[in-house]
Image 1: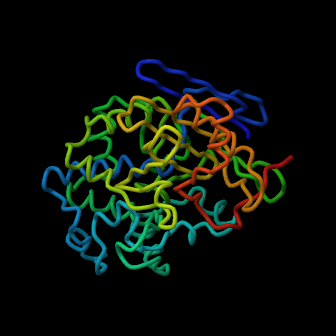
Image 2: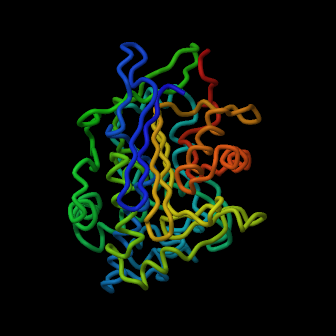
Length: 360
């Protein structure tokens, strides 16, 4: 691991820590307050915004997507199936970034949401609508377009107006076309084909938009999930709908579930709610007790390193830390829990050709 940071909260008590370097060239250390691209945790913010619109009677979760976006009407696909990833719509990013050359070529490209949707709809269907969970970023690009069609405002501005600003999340923002992360932050590393680490902290994130472009901090994410789970952002009916889940794995339904932009994982001590997120070089996981009283958010600055079928000591150490932070389990119990790997629900963007082992 190059660098990592975290914030843990237990009631009013808070612990913040960091380890490693933010820049391998200078040795600049990682700090716990860094801003970070949080990837698919963006989806929880977007789902919260759509659920607020549902509570106002402006969006019906069980309505067909074609009611709001006639140009993307697909039989059986509803707003709700977009938000819980049961639409069966394919994922655009595996087409967009199938090779390292794609990642370099599109580093500064501005994509329109409609381009991303076309790519996703051009992919094979993953199943019938409502059939099973199958993660797809295309779902949340469509969700962003629904927000825009209903509110007649920019989707990212609407999320800011309804969620980010009221909670005072001063380090959380959508970057738009800006390629540089504002404020203190780490590099964003991918193991590259030449055996070195390549920094992708400068990048146009329009390819992720309402599916994963958000920048935030560990403290802001903990504040957001505490407000969400505590009922400050949604009425009880909408929060209950958000927490109505489908199994992440039909063959192992007790392991975890996905609701409307919100997931739960079974850990020692019960179910913990939140989301994870990965973009090129930054990964984040944010998990919380059901009432938001016990919380952990952890970020790392290297991705796409884990070769399938090979040992992953970084993943095991991460799992052990998360279990300890959330449950207070002793080290031995945490290691045992981490051995049953907690799934990364949000897959890393791009195709398998991007995965390279860390340089030694």
